[in-house]
Image 1 (cartoon, rainbow, N blue to C red):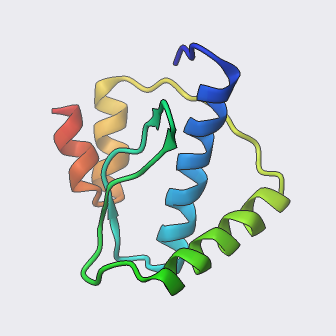
Image 2: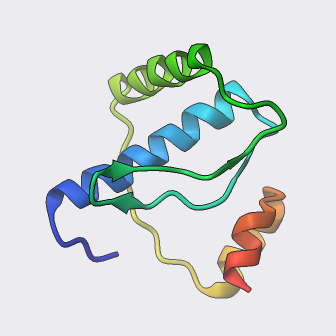
Length: 100
């Protein structure tokens, strides 16, 4: 993936950290897309309950814990078939839909 700036790269990475935090806190949550945008980043989540202010604090704290673990950020390019197989295994309907 090509980034216009290092800030775009950081924002994209942060969206993945946020998605990881949400999935760890609420494993049944489905995730869609999470791009960097001009003012930060976001992720679309499909969760039965609405996120509360308390949930946002939990997410922020979990993100900080993940970052403190200093995980590697590795970009991996997959073929359409490989990506489909991966997301089918994870029952990730939104990613499968995007691939198709």
